[in-house]
Image 1 (cartoon, one colour):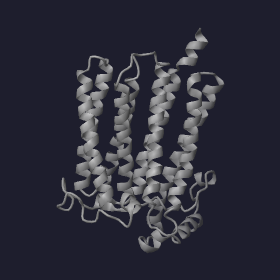
Image 2 (image 1 turned 135 degrees about the vertical axis):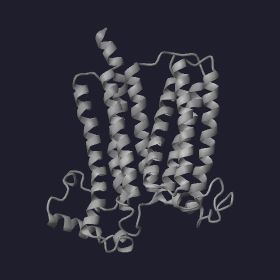
Image 3 (image 1 turned 90 degrees about the horizontal axis):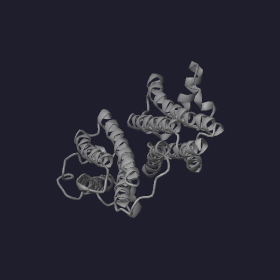
Image 4 (image 1 turned 180 degrees about the horizontal axis):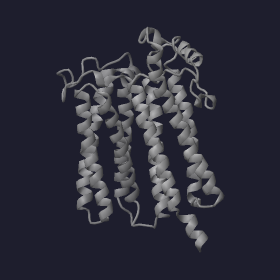
Length: 343
C-alpha cells in the first residue's frame, strides 16, 4: 500500500519541479536582459561543454573579441567598441548560457536520484523524460536562433526568437502542471464540466499572446508607434503591410505591434469575463475561484504594464518586468486550468 501511494504522488518531486521552473523563469528574465542589452551575439560559437569556461586570460579575451569583430553586428552597429565594452555584453550572454547549463543539471541530477529511489510517480515518468528532451532541444534552438544573426543580420531572426521564447514558456507551463500533479496525486473522476475547456482556451490565448510579444521584441517594434490607443494617430499603422504575407506577419513592425495589441484586448476581455463567471459559479471550489481572480488581476496588471512599457519606448526595467509578469500570468493560467479538472 505504501509503495502505491508513493508511486501516485511525491511532494519532494513537486518541490524539485517547482525549483526547475524557477530556473527556467530566471532563464527567461536573463535572456530578455541579454536581448535588450544587445548581448546575444557576443559569443559566436556553440560549445556545449568547453563553452562553460569563460576566457581566463587577456589573450583569450582578444581571441573572442576578434571573432565578434567578424560578424555584421560589430561591423555595422558596434564598430569601434572597446575590449572592455565587449566584455560587458559577453558576460550577459555567457551568464545566460551558463544558467541554461545549470538548469539542465538541476533537472537531470535529481531526476536520476528520484528515479533510483523510485520516488517519481509512475504516471509522470514519461512526461518528465519528454520535458528533459524539450530542455535539450531548447539548447539547440537557442543556437539556431543565435546563428541567424551571425552572417547577414545584425540581430537574430524574430521568428527564431519566437520559437526559442515559446519553447521556454512551454517548458515553464509543463513544469508547473507536472509539479501540481506530483503534489496532489492522480485526479479523481469528476462530473463533466465546461470549465476545463474554458480554462484551456484562456491558457492557449495567453500563450499565443506571448508568442506575438516575442515577435514584437524580435522586431524592436516597441520602439515605434508609442502612442496609445492609436498607432501614429491611426487605427491601423501606415506601414502595416510588408513584402508579402510572411513579411507582414513576422517582420513588419507595425503589423506585429498591432497584432500584439489586438490579442491583448482579447485576452484581457476573456480573462475578466471568465474571472467573474468563475467567482459566481456554484460548481467551482473556493480555491479555484481565488485562482481565477488572481489570474484576472494579473492579466489586467500585465495589460497596463504593457501600455506603460510601450509609451516609454521599452526601457530596460519595464521590459524585463513585462516579460516577468507574462511568466506569472502563464503560471497562474496553468494552475487555474489544472485546478478546473479536479474535484
